[in-house]
Image 1 (spheres, rainbow, N blue to C red):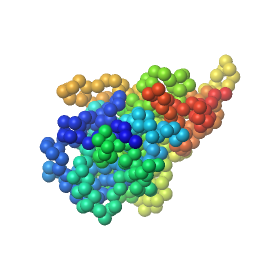
Image 2: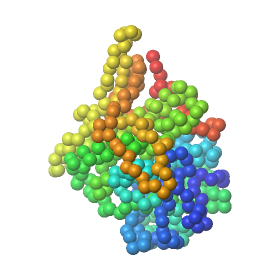
Image 3: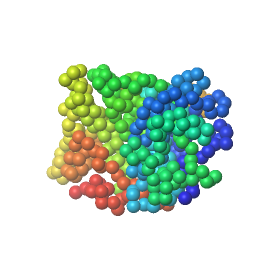
Amino acid sequence: MSGSVFPGWPRSSDDLVPLPNCDGPKLEPFDFHGPQKIEFLEYIGEGLHAHVVKVQIRNRIYAVKLFRFCFDDDWLSPYYDMCRKDWEMMRAFYEYAEPFNCECRAFARLKEAGHEDLAIGCFGYLLLDEEHERKLLTQLHDHRIDFNGNIDCPGGNHDEGPLRERFLGPDGRPPPIRGIVKEYAPPGEEHEFRQADAEKMLADVKKLQQLGITRIDVAARQVIGGRISDFSTAVTTPHFATTPELNPHLTPDMRRAVELQAFIHAKEDYLEFDAMIREWNWEHAKEHGVITASAYPGHKGAPGLCRYDFRRKVAQKRVYTFVDPRLYDWKVRPRKGVKNRRRRLRAKPPLWIYRCGENDGLANSLMSDSTKFMSIEWEYRDGRIFPLMSHRHNIALLARN
């Protein structure tokens, strides 16, 4: 089925525009200073969403992350019962949530906010032309690079063929391979991670969240040269999972669902941090010493905060996380031609306290050491994205006594 979901083939560099095409930060195309010319030097590795290749462009070494055309369940896509052949619906989700655009939006936010130092250097996106795609696959054929599916199921198909061919462009061709050009830094060994690295990473997560970036996929493998390197799962404000203002037709319950999802994503970053430290200590503490850094006391999830309502004679359950990413003012943009001013971040931002009312089940779930299973389901109708309020999982999450 044809429909413009992914970027199409540019006729020239003049056709390249900042991406993605939705509200919020946009990443500029990489400047080749002329025709696209890339020398592929070495295959670095792969992750769930992409392959990473060491390249040379104009006598400079970079790492290029080349994205797969993933399965829908690998990102925040619509509820699986919906018709995922609907290109208009898939594009609405794709712009905000597909891995390539997640990374474009997060790196673009760091640039617009003047905090590029919080992550590995990023120099823009590229769309691999046909000549360079052939060159890549020929030179690195031993690695059997495939751009359909994911790391666990390469060569993935949808009902009618390869995932890349699911939404053809206006010219009838599959879309080009999408990539992001990054600073090259040799990957370190996980056992080299130390207390100072952990403390810096926790501080950086809090800074990223103040910039409206959550769902960071916190892990030791993320750290290259002391900085976070991967944002392919990131949620960057404004986003349908954080910003109810994007859809003026949300009901109060729907707005509450968006708030809950934003809270879950923000809190999960710290739970992942604690899980990372537990795992590292299990594998490396005997040889390299214990890392004691922790987001929540004892790496056991957030303790509850309880306030007694004397009028109703009931305990109102509350849970906290460290930063409310919704406080970032994404509507303030630098004027064209004016150098970005560095956004001021708070050394101790106020806690985000989520009020669960009398819902003990919700409070206990939010206080556990993982909230990944709590994700809200989403639907698309009338040209907008909504929380799927009829879904039993969402109903259970939002129930109030």
